[in-house]
Image (tube, rainbow, N blue to C red):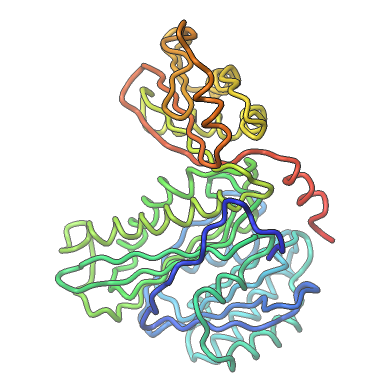
Length: 408
């Protein structure tokens, strides 16, 4: 974790304990830092699991094995290594992951494919097997810890611990959700660069849990960007222990399914926003809302073209109401757009409507809006009913400083 806290940081919330999920942490020493860097969460037998993973074709062995193993639908343990991504490490990286899985599986007397492993940090350095083995031994013997301690342990360049919670009534039973995430740079959709974990005591069929997580991901994690770079290690996993005692949710028609899906979406949205708020060097949180597109997917792609534009992001960093840069980004998105129907605004104040600057446009309220930390950009394409909101941050000198010095 960085010593310099983001100005957009949020306090860590009070998260509920999740029956059937027990977190522990230890120090493996993957980097020369004086903190814990290995997380172990043990799950009750029968815990359902599902996940979404990076689309980066140079993904880590952790992602490959996780993507394969979620198909069997159950989990007994989660291991997260911070400080070494173990990506682009060939057979040695694969062996390290398989050794971790085997070690934990032997301890729990479960199949290795029920042990899920994530790693984050520098690319191209094989995960040291001896440090992993010793770290896991220490974690297995450690006392249970809080979710905040767990969130701190999974971080790398993060400047603050990130967590979220929600609850839902499912068939007359209250179910709880607690979630943690790490992410600060190399953040882009498909899906965004991060490691995120959602824990719930609800009883949920793995297939339905996958449906809920995939839908939530498409509207939250896949709608954020810091720098347009998608990592080799991106993973979001959801674990449902079933300890709340509700009748299992097996489909969208199950009593309480809508409430559970909404709670999961809420948790994912909170986490996604926290990642953007911790964007490397970020000073401003930016919401880009696109309406009037030919479809929601088209609106999302237009929004991401704006949110990923260095020219737009640096203009916001400089508090410059240069709406021409937004016009440029819309035009390069490769999506249906009509110059003569396009409208652009900031903070609820329209600067241009239907392809023309407003004759009575007053830049003063826009300039005042851009001096704040919460920025909104509005775009109306005037073509259809498609809408989307994506979230990003400004691009500052701090981003360069952090990433030019990342490996030291």
